[in-house]
Image (cartoon, rainbow, N blue to C red):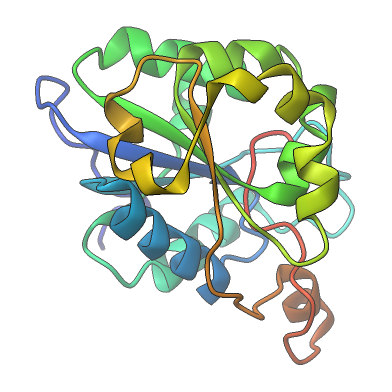
Length: 213
């Protein structure tokens, strides 16, 4: 039987890696769409889907077992450049800032970029140690319908306004020293984890990715 999660590459390699964290409850084509856009627009070598054992800001009601969510991610990650990982469970971390600190210490040659949706940028100030995230790694934010204005006028965007990188320079983001972040407009994808759980047809996108959201 194949392993539930993908084996990570050797720590000694120098890779440009996008980190997509979330519950993946369940994983769907929207996650795949964002990941492929990140690979293309940011010049990444890989994207790691970090399935959260339990998101601190989400209710456990309606949350599928961890192994079920990992299995859904394995089924949805139809790209050899995407790795599904349970690294947060293995590290014993609950918060994104702690996870990133551990990854940077254990894999200093990798160039990590945190990937997140505009909805998560809007309420990022609720995350534990959220300023550390901007100071640990570059951040790529993907536009979401109806969220752009709120996200770009929110606490996080305003605080790090001077560190914002234009879209035309996004391909260099992984090699920039933090704080550095960019806001990317990408084609809309209708997949919704909420709709999938409810047995509905895909509609308005709900949260695709993020650490504590």
